[in-house]
Image 1 (cartoon, rainbow, N blue to C red):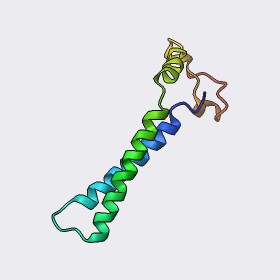
Image 2 (image 1 turned 90 degrees about the vertical axis):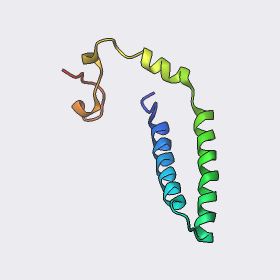
Image 3 (image 1 turned 60 degrees about the horizontal axis):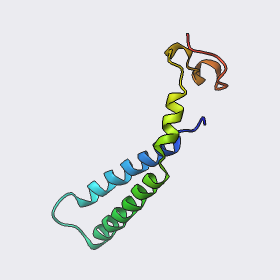
Length: 91
């Protein structure tokens, strides 16, 4: 389960980007019709993305990975120390 959390991280980054874009489109008092249409599309896309993120999220999966981590932080393997193979421990 090496990729636990990466998918959710990427979806969170996408959510943050779309939310920022929606904020830009909705600032101010005057908006052209294309801006209003884009804002509505982004709102719909954000709601779909949020529901997708929540339906695929399983707290028990993440809890299992966290519970399987060693109690000693020095025993956790680091990809950066061993070139990505996961065979060396941090010292």
